[in-house]
Length: 148
Length: 453
Image 1 (cartoon, rainbow over the protein chains, first blue to last red):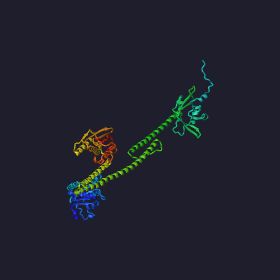
Image 2: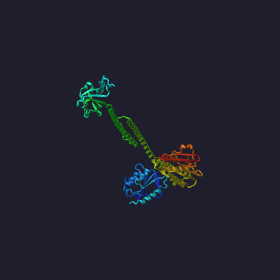
Image 3: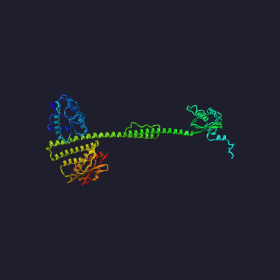
Image 4: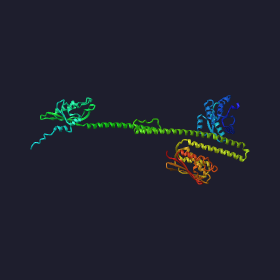
């Protein structure tokens, strides 16, 4: 487990087991499935990213390459997670992609205000979802030459 | 001829006494000027009795009013009488104001009189002054007229200042009205103690404003409620947007897994069953999307610009032609008038109407779709006419309802939101939508947009 947490490629923050299953399946199909960690809610995501509580043994400097963040989650929602990631100098360079069911403008505006790197609407079919994620990942890996 | 001699018996004293003019007979003994006699008219005018004044000095009987420091009647009269003595000629005085001393119930008082006096010498053969006749014309009434005029002018002054005051009050009312038009009711008009028509206007106005404020308060409550329910609706459609899609993704995604991972274990019927599940998941998604668009249009404000309608229609027709990739449809685009409207919304209207025309004429061998516009009163009317399936006008009432369909989805695909959306957008533009159709012959959809605000 400890070992697996090093060199994390992608953190998937998603409260829906079904969506998580479909997203993971899609990532795997596109060879993005290695070193993906699925966190089931916002509070767990924050604990993991900031190496707190359950994840206090983790090194905060082991930054994931990409965070896929669901917007609508109970208690700590995606926007809250995004806000804390972007407010902390240790984590703000990690590219975050918000995934949402919604096409509502207010979510989009709020996400970009908080400094999200990309915003994808979850399609009914995840056929092409991983493709989009792969492209975004590539883009942010190239743009984001952050120190390790 | 005998000289004419007047009757010796004529009673000149009686004649003198009863002469209508005011006469005083004075002794030429300056400075006393003793009163020798006076006629009745004079006595009456001065409210004196003969025995009271005869053989007394003129100025003893008629002194200046001691209360009136400006009184100069005595000195003027003295001067005139002395002039008469000196010149032995009549002397007319300017109008004099005398304060005649009168006896009233409360004792002695002075009454204001305006007299036009004339002093006439009575001379003997030696040209000596025997008497002086002091003749007086009482012009008090003339002077009273003047004073009445003064009073009247004072009244006019008062009236005009009242007018001015009223003008100021009217201005205050007008200014208040002007303020009220900006919905500023902070300053109410005050009523005066006059209780006149203007006060009545102010009272009426104030009660009107009170009523208006009440209505505005009620309106605010209704508005707050409306805003609340709008917010409710907003969060409802937000929830719909999120929560209704999530299970659809699961249904579709898991059905997909079934096909991909277990498809080899299923026969054709089994595979078809799964395809139906997937197809319906997509259909439901389309419904949700349409419904959300429909509710979003309701909330959205209009951004009106002058629309190049011909370009817009041309672009949409080209897009549809590219999608269809066949030439079974003959588009006839007539000259199209430009109009003001919200670009994306009107585009949605045209797209929906042309798509409908294409859809419902899809079963014709040669579909003809005509698009045109014409002026009607204060509006521009646009129409999209097809020769497709049409509909029974008996069901016209259902045509623009949400989720109302006049054809089954087996015949023609659709969610039943398209025309409802068209109507909603056009109503938002203060326009109208209507249609004419005949079953199996085609339909014409019209919408009008106002040409002025």
